[in-house]
Image 1 (cartoon, rainbow, N blue to C red):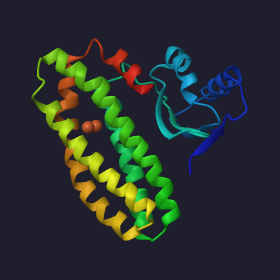
Image 2: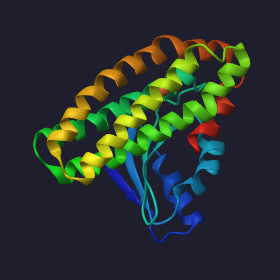
Image 3: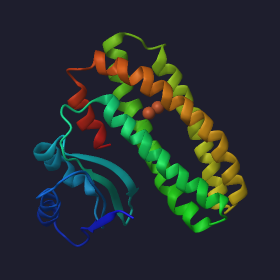
Length: 223
Ligand SMILES: [Fe+2]
Ligand SMILES: [Fe+2]
């Protein structure tokens, strides 16, 4: 279990102070879950401004009454931030949640399957949005390649979204056998997709977008 920080009931200033305090005396990476009864994105601009390179921030729950963020404090800091580095980290993070869904389904534990699936589908949709709304358009603009690798990746996202919808239906029906079945199909597609991005597209993106990567990553982080 990772540590958690509950900011519910705090105003923005108090919440910012609580986040700042986490960085004091930090030694090594520290992973925690930040929880609040307000949209935690309000804290992100100041955090990016003051602590860029010193944290990873990915969504776990996005309202309507609770918000949770997967926050990793980075020591030593990562500088400069890179497309390959940050996106690959999110692949690993989503893979880890995926394993929890798979294990819960196989164990017939519908409650944990539901909880982990909610985090998984949010993480995947956020990751797709970071690519489709941020990275891919910037890549296409910089290279002029609109019918190349990004087109294939968008098609594969569509295929994975279809499987996520089927999984959502199976979760709603509480059908653990069906969840397990879909996870095996999704795992194959997801693994191959991620390898293509990590070994080719992110590296090409890093070369073509070296000047803009930092600004791009700040923008997509806030999606
Ligand atoms: Fe992708
Ligand atoms: Fe990706």
